[in-house]
Structures are given as C-alpha cells and as structure tokens.
Length: 122
Image 1 (tube, helix red, strand yellow):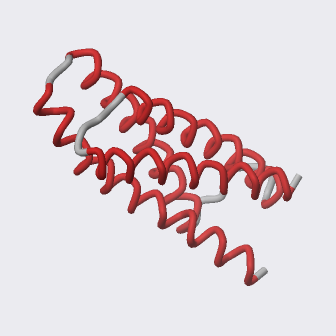
Image 2 (cartoon, helix red, strand yellow):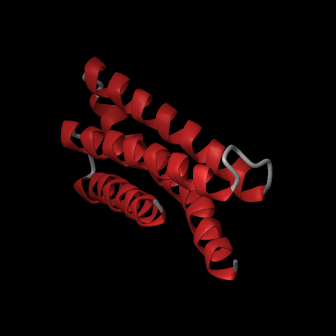
C-alpha cells in the first residue's frame, strides 16, 4: 500500500504543478488547467487516504496532518473557484487567477515536503 500511496501523492504533485505553472506561463486560465487541478486533487486525496491508513489508521492531529488537511481544502476551493471563473467567462479573472493558484500550490508543498521528510526520518 505504501508504494500506491507514494505514487498517488507524486502523481498529485505532477498534475498540480503542471496545471499551476502552465497556467502562469500561459497567462490565462484554460479548461485544461482545471482538469489538471482536479486530477491533482483526486490523486492527493487518494494518496493522503492511503498514507493515513498506513500511519495510524486515521487522521493524526499534528503539523503534517493539519497542513495536509488545509492543503486539500485549499485545493478543493481552488478547483471550484477556477470552475466558476471559467463558467463566467470573465477574461480579467482568467488572467489573474494564477496569483491564487501559486499561493495554493506553495501551501500545498508544505505538507508534501513535511510528509516526505517525516517519512524518511521514520
């Protein structure tokens, strides 16, 4: 199960990073970015669920657990907001959305890095 959890979390990193940075480089939110955001979210939830089962069988209230929960919540809000921006066809919002994306991505990296660090130390 550990291998599947690592693959899922790494896949989440790949999808989410490509989505966020390609949006930034492109300069405008596109529907394919949204697909990558949701794919990152799905694989993050899957990987987090598998890791939770391996670690303690459930959610652990520590630095990694709290930041991980916050990151998933922000990814969910991010994907929903991106959906609304695309549905409203607001060009200004599409061009500025990357600012929020990068902030969420940086926050998401905190539990990703702490999880990798804690995993290597144990």
